[in-house]
Image 1: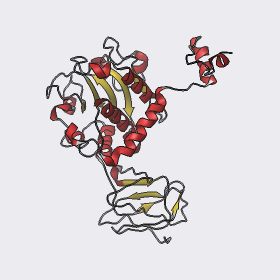
Image 2: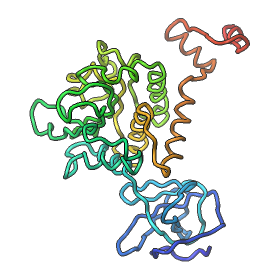
Image 3: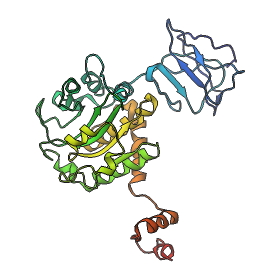
Image 4: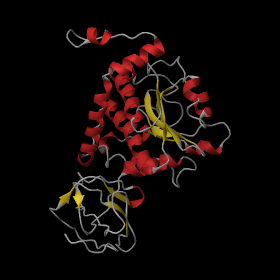
Length: 338
């Protein structure tokens, strides 16, 4: 490909075998099919900024796309030189993450449309049920209600108290949204099987480690089904602006994190909660989303059983004065103890 000027692009598809392990830059969709390009990190100002070619129907990897607000960022193997942009893809998860991240006020038309769009785009449409979608953002207009939205068990009534596990978020005017796994105020049913399953507890704990690597503070209850245990003050203090949430639903929540305000950081957090919820429900994802979904769960499995280093053990000994080393014969327990 040539290194021509990147002032605008047509709608034709560009193909090239000249792949380099470089950061392309950023292309933002403009009007009338033109794509103005801006330099990004790793691209010197005196070089022509390339455009990016994507086939209309994919596949998109190994090019990583952040389509929030029409932003396209390529971070791995890509084209050097000037190419044309065929289409900037968007998806329901990205659009939902943007809305969740902004908090209050909510979008015109409410949240339901964004949640409904997940089914048939990310998750197979057969899992969609009108009674599984809650949009209570309107409670923000009152003095006593706690606004929220999310996905619950479809066997619940279309409004009012519900039971079982759910993935919900609580929007605020100043702090974005707090996303959570929570149990309805009607109790564990009909999800006793999920909430008392040891694997669910381990996966939720692994979610905390997964999000911590992104710099996202996540609180997780030791036992998701323990409705007698509320979010402790030490955890509540880490989430200022959500005191009303903890006062109303502190006993029902068993995992929570603040969604970052930046769309590109919000998306992986919202994805993590939704994709783990989908896994527990046994939902299948659409083929175009399988790679991202499988990659997330592969990383989550790697966090289920953490492999502590000797430094980790030393830190625990200094803070807690004891540790328990457990494992089959020949795994180095005695050597680590010494």
